Amino acid sequence: MFVKPAKGLQVPDPALRDFLPKEGRKVIPSEYWTRRLLDGDVKETDPPAEPPAEAAGPQGEAGSVSPSAPRAAAARPKE
Image 1 (tube, one colour):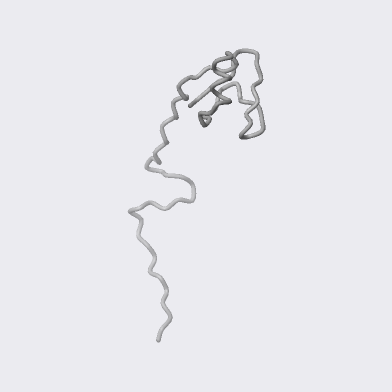
Image 2 (image 1 turned 135 degrees about the vertical axis):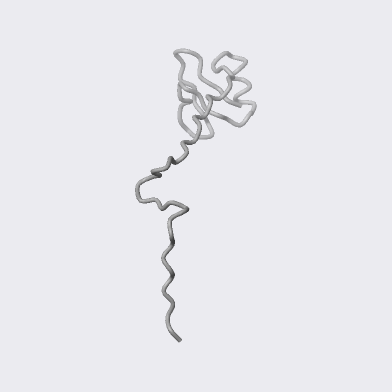
């Protein structure tokens, strides 16, 4: 479940031993989080949409090798 703290509240997260960030966090449903929901301390929401992974363009990333680039032959010791 994804929860956000109600406006103006700092809600402790016992699993991570910190406060729930204002943008929210995915938590494991439990009696604790059910109570926070019923008390109005948190609101259950949908998680934010993840940005699409950027595909490497024709230039690729610095230091990367194009899949179509010729490969150097591995040097083998002569027997």
